[in-house]
Amino acid sequence: MDIIKYLKKVGYDTVQRSFYSKILEWESWYIADVQKFHRYKVYNGKNRISCRRLSLGMAKKLSEDMADLLLNERVQITVQHKATHDFVMKVLDDNNFNVLGNDYQERKAYTGTVAYVPYLEHVQVNEEGEIEGSGKIKINYVSAEDIYPLSWNNGTITECAFVFEKTIGTKDYAHIQIHKIVGMQYVIENHVVECTSGSGIEISPENWGDLKDFAGLSSRTETGNLERQFVIDRLNITNNYCKNNPMGVAIFANAIDVLQGLDIIYDSYVNEYVLGKKRIFVAPEMLAQDVLGNVVFDPNDVVFYQLPEDSLRDGGKPITEVNMDIRAEQHERGINNLLNMLSMKCGFGQNHYKFENGSLQTATQVISENSDMYRTMNKHEIILQSVLKELIRIIARLGKVLGKGTDPDSEIAVNFDDSIIEDKQAERQSDRQDVSMGAMQLVEYRAKWYGETEAEAATKIIQEIPEPDPKEE
Picture (spheres, one colour):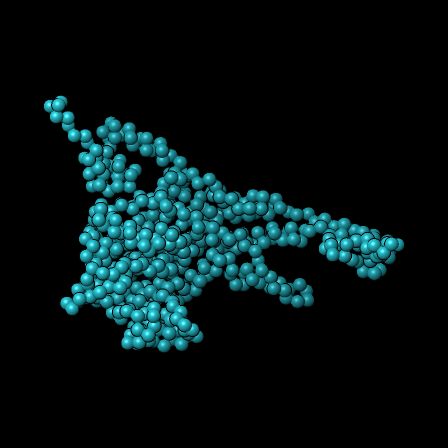
């Protein structure tokens, strides 16, 4: 279904259509199946032969590594208000965020943008229109090809459409959800369109009850709040494909030529072994049977190749062995040069990847704070930190609507994983010395190293102060 055409039909504009073609191109590199590159034809002088170029799969590897660096099991999220913290962690756990969070960081790496859209499910409303304490908070995870910004300011998307594809029976449907500002609040509109074979037939809300996945879906919801109920997460890389476009770009978006070079050399490297396979050319007389009727050479052995009948004329040799030289060292040198270039262009610094003895290896994950990788991590964490905080506040706000006693304004601390930093232990020891000398407050130390908010750290310090012994007074 042509989503951009549909949005224009209902009165909305979005980013350039060509940008979504670029996203599809990045995805094809991620799965290592780029048309007219990994699948191509070669003319051999008589016919055009279809070929499949082998791939080192570096777009996938880059995306995996970036996801593991940004959001892994060591990332700590702390909400100062304990009831809010417990409620938010329960919602994230129920929505499998520990797994899907990392999954969508990988998707973010190869598409440039993902979104998280919390919503209320199975909510009951009383006669006064007030939500009773029932229902659950669910999270929709959306990748770039299904995100359509409608308005934005200074790179921040303020209104947006999201597309969720469903198959019910034998028919395909597109659930188009539009978040827009009306007056002093966000309004969420839902549209259901049948898109089987591109039909584009809009289904009236009165008929949604006949479709199990859309039963109970409201066509319009007033949030009563001017805060977004969606979160856009993108890589902190300037979009140099489309001017004034708030969407992100893939981590390898500006390294496509390097990916092409890598796959060309890797494909040639493997073909060296295929084409360099040992061959023995044998005259037909040598393939005959001996006097006892035994076959001299095994006819099923592919190493032997029968020469034409007159091959022994004019001094031809009955058996000729051919050994092709394999240029493994030259190929490995070329692959490593391009791997180094790719690593630098994608922010991982030099020598992060190495191709050795026919396999890809990753450098030991220990880096210093002045390295390219550390700066790249900090750069991307700037956006990810605000994303996680906004997601938590939305969940806390919806929890408040459900009467769970949550505080959306509570202080939030996000402590990213710095275990790969080489001098982190030395820095921690230095901070301990600063605390002992009074140059650093204990509150600051706990907040920095224990993933606590300063208020939470102060409370714990007070609790750890021993009560005075009455006998000593």
